Image 1: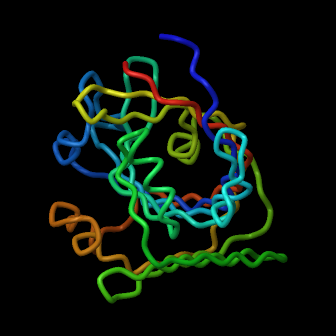
Image 2 (image 1 turned 180 degrees about the vertical axis):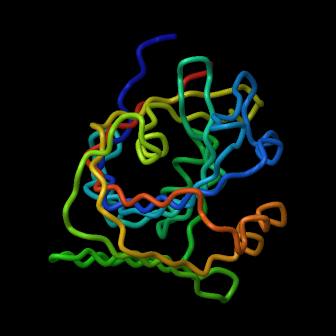
Length: 234
């Protein structure tokens, strides 16, 4: 495999990761060849992740009106031998050019929709993400103490927030891999959170199993600067 070229620089800021445990069979159709679910005690996982994309540069260039924006994605956790990573089921952003680039180069499942984000910080952090889809509004809200700390490497928070690899499938069905670099993220002590996402309405019938289910873990990560490298065939 050739040394990949840098594709994107940005800052991923204030990430809320709401994770559910599921039967691994639910994920199999989404997993590229050569990969398997990354499990704990035989259970697989899917996360609803909301955060802010800031100071974005593609190939070193800031695209006008596409520098700072929110993203919400639904992702699953997979591994290829020692490589642990994620596969995205769906990624929402508010800018149309982002799906065009990502879907073309990475065959990702991006979609541009009406959405917004707001973060207020003092002694307490308040986070709100809102989307409008099919005429309905859905929100994610979280409150945390503004006292970031580094969880240990064997913690559940570390398991879900730290992944060096992204995986996908090319348009002709071959598995893709791309590298994501960032330092380990601090997390904020979560006080409370809530969301009203209808997973079946938003992501499809099979994901309705998440409706009403209590999360396996909720983590609020501080984020950092990131580098995303060009994808390559595995």
